[in-house]
Image 1 (cartoon, protein in one colour):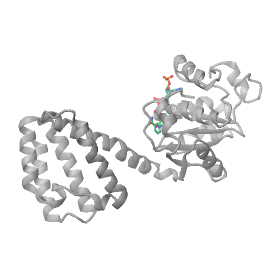
Image 2 (cartoon, rainbow, N blue to C red):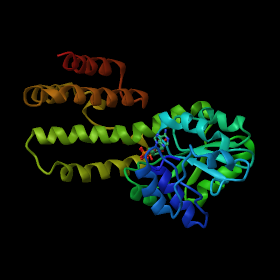
Image 3 (cartoon, protein in one colour):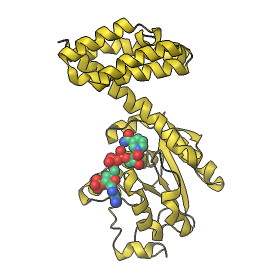
Image 4 (cartoon, rainbow, N blue to C red):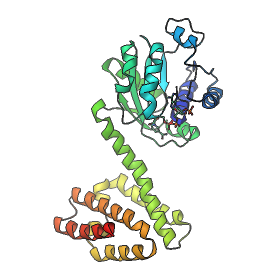
Length: 292
Ligand SMILES: NC(=O)c1ccc[n+]([C@@H]2O[C@H](COP(=O)([O-])OP(=O)(O)OC[C@H]3O[C@@H](n4cnc5c(N)ncnc54)[C@H](OP(=O)(O)O)[C@@H]3O)[C@@H](O)[C@H]2O)c1
């Protein structure tokens, strides 16, 4: 239910492992039809009387051992409430949201069904990308004890590596994924914009070898050891020069640059590489730039 990128891809990966996709439903019929064509499955209308009969085993095609909710995070609770009548004993309902645990699936559990939260730590901009990347990704699994082994097996079936994540720490787990993925992209967007401001094209070709080298350092030595640069070394004059020219040529980038430098500085402090005095003097410079 929710024929988007992750839901469609997970269903397809399971189909390739020999499972049958019993039906597909989505908010819009066009999405449901597109996914149904990929998955060689019928489109189900959750509002039809057949859906109501399914729990009693009389629906023509609504019976399913597993129901995957591929709807966006905000819609999961609503979808769970709608499908609860389909999810009696013997059915397990899974969602893929990182920050949510089993709470939004409560209506399913009340109806006697099982519930699991399975979060692939991956960035999937399309179904095709998800099909390629979900196998090989790490998945955060939150499941009740009687379903834990089953959930690990399901993740392994799609080629993922399961990691148990307790429900209360899922927001931390998801915040880490967001920081690593979206945060990195936002930093690179800022770096690309700074090169554009300098008239350098194509900017990404300049940045790619640097980023590859940096990532190799991080994987090899760990982020704390790999952290370098003027903010960590306390080179206030260099940072002042950056801020001066950014302010004159690309003032809208002053705030993002200062925010990134503050992030570097804070990481340097936590890594024990920046002294309090150095941090205070560089922070004063950055705060001035952010205020103007
Ligand atoms: N994409 C990623 O990189 C990624 C990575 C890890 C985890 N996730 C998680 O995976 C889940 C799905 O994300 P996604 O990126 O695959 O989203 P998506 O491509 O935007 O797909 C979401 C689908 O949910 C459907 N939907 C929304 N509200 C619905 C409702 N009330 N009833 C039925 N269907 C509904 C939409 O249907 P229509 O198309 O019919 O409007 C849409 O096709 C989310 O929980 C997300 O946090 C995503």
